Image (cartoon, rainbow, N blue to C red; front, side, top):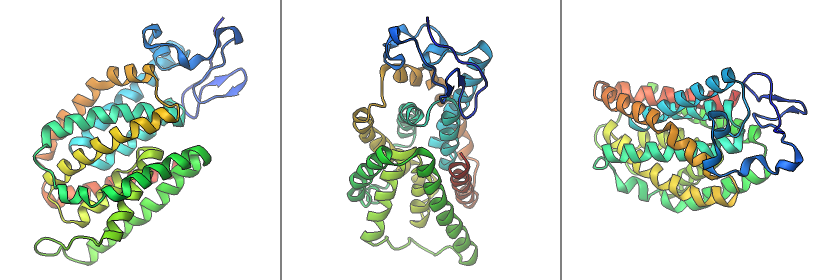
Length: 301
């Protein structure tokens, strides 16, 4: 007989053994619950790896669908909104599994954004971050293995909140410089690359890091989105083998991402239509505001 789950979504469904973050405990004869192949996921609840009531399943899928729309919108318009999808996935799935499932959904959004903005990219800005990416990914992998999810997310949220507020203060007190700003020195670019690699590996939360970096370089909104799109497509593809090595990815999560793909497409459609109507100054304030919200979400999630 399969195990059972009762309760409501949030920090986790209740099992007879206690809170298990939407997991449930099967009978010993059934073996591990998380290893069935995708073709055996015959119901929507099984696709999530859970046994849920119809109401619980509806709520869970609604949250994931909303997150998928947010991913598509973030990839093609206001980037910082993507961290809200991190929080929604974490409400439904355990932290490490939500990171893996969201990674696959993000890759779908990256592909859509690259198809739309493939010509609006500043490769110089991306090349400046490459030396720090691998150390950042390795650092994030190590932190996932030894530090609690809550500690990591709150630490990242606190740092991002301070940096974002500092950027807002500087923009308020100092007018925008005329002409192209000077490139950041290589130690600063190395630090940004390392921070982006670590935060995206730990919590899929490198969006605010890139927001601060690209706004600091004075890029226009199309170049901002295009550079972001290519950067995150590359870095998210690089994260796949790390996630496999940590045992986070499985066929069921790939099928879950494919089911959510239409939501990503809808969000991308909305984002590409909206971004045309937003002036550059309003766009900069919007992405900074979204980065602030993202940092707060990480702090309180």
